[in-house]
Length: 440
Image (cartoon, rainbow, N blue to C red; front, side, top):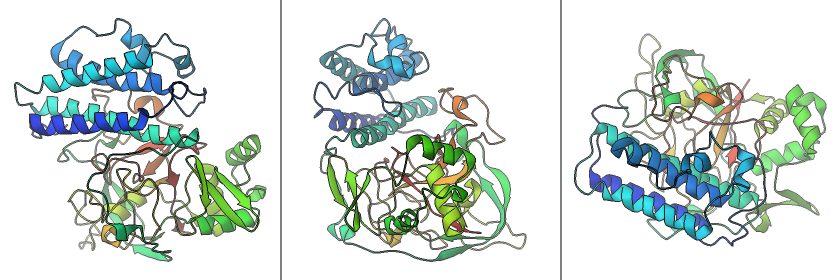
């Protein structure tokens, strides 16, 4: 953590309050049955997940900073995701819905109370941000769960939403951007206000010049792959990808269906006409890889993706990138004119929308709209040290996951930046993920 970065008690209280409000917006309208829901490998029962979020605040703030006894005697056994197995969460002796909400509300009140009589130091600031960002991640997971299970779209309170003009169809954005090569510092730096363990620390990588698509692959482009029997052509798939396709019997992206001569997709609890210029979403890494083989393209490596998103234009005489931006457009936090984030639009925009968010090289929407698969497996950087307060955040997942970058429409703007590394196993289709391609 940055030993000099501190937020005021008022600022931290506002972040906690906002995160707590978003969680309630995502679960308050669920029925009693939906609070448990079906047992699936890609979801958690909301009854457990709401308690888990509260328990995280309790563990890393109330117990870590105040050495308080747990509010629920067996809370660690119930809510620690590395103690209770995933499949056991449906049958665990959890509090009732009302009891869970009361526990969550009490934790929220106590977390805010302790901010009332002092100004936090850098360590406390980091722990508060860790708890808020943890809740942000689970809130995004709730948006996945609601979609996976066919619930109604979430209803978020109106705020400083995007201008209506941004919802006007913007069309495709064809073509490649020329990305110069050179030495690039991949990863987070100690100067950032907050970094996760898997971003530590920036280190030099050499990247050859390459060409990257200005936009993510669209529904119309992916439909061409489907219509040309891409799902049945063995030569387009890797060994593991083909095994997944056979087991899953996949013939098209998740939540698509054919209606006469056109495609529809399911958006939460409703079927809508497939938007041709929206990015394709709910495709896994294997599907992205097969599409690339069909199209004569490839997925970007993680260093290529980050360089394209964050490098300032130009190089010095040694081929060194002269600057590194926190966001594609610069160092100022995202606005609704630059990135589709925070759930404000409850879905994707055309890939040509939001030109104010372009990178220095002309790539669009590298933050927001859809997560983007990269070719890279999820491994630690050379500077990785297990000194993070949340030691289980990354270490258990190295090796069998693929890296995604950039965030999606449901990602909180305060969480995402160019160096943020997301990671999922390559068969996951529930995530709001798509991809962009590079020239061979």
